[in-house]
Image 1 (cartoon, rainbow, N blue to C red):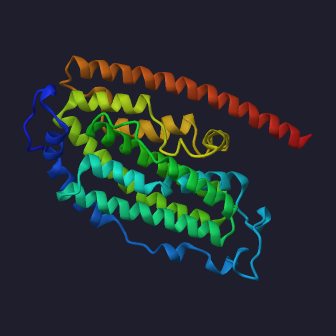
Image 2: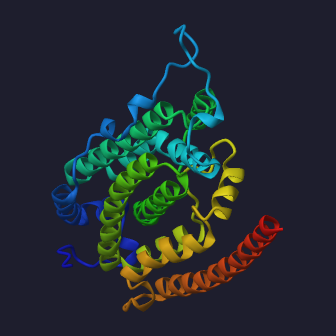
Image 3: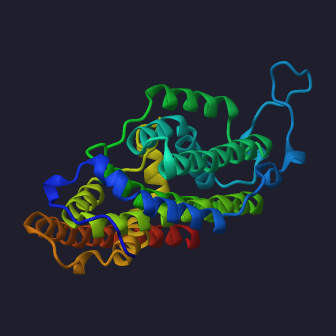
Length: 323
């Protein structure tokens, strides 16, 4: 990729200069995205004929009961986490619009991304209610609590931190959706989450390619941003009610855990960026590169320990089942 903007000294790059220098790349990536992205209708993925009135204003309302849905317990937990994450879109839009602006190619992308992400929340909520997969009253209480807290990114240090974060986070979301569909036990749920995951992958490609261009423009600053994001990474839904318990269940159920995070999220993006072989780094960039390498080694060790505990747990459960 050829970048027309001049290389500047590290301390010369401001967010405003980077936004301007990357505008051409954003326009190119936006054009590519619009050519490959396929429009789809969320209502076509919802099993509306399964729906029934809930108690309230309708005399024929039927109260929600757990056994009304074929979705597995793990699938229900993951679906709620994934939906509440999507629900906080207004806060996410405010974050990226404040950082990237609302004009030019940047603004066009911000609004397009927001529209596509909004579709995800719509179809997931419609599915959950029509299929009676979760308690609707509890779901609404969770939504109100989560959105009332708002959202403040861990990565507001710079525009580069934000770009680096979403490059990894979009892939993490894609993996979480796909694995949730896999464990759901409902073909309709798996089909719609696979459709959402396809969008998330395209979003990841946009931000990943933008991050690559940033490394060419300002390698030291971009490397430091990548190190900061990777070593401090948290999913955007970390503040929702019951997140820690749900995350533990999703880890054990292999929807999202340390091994998946290391192998399927961090490593693919870092390999694409050729992050550990980047030339022409200054002292601060080299230090960030070394620290990133050490962190990835430590994370792999932690993931190996988690794998061993998970295998032991599976063995105990299999022994109980056979006994």
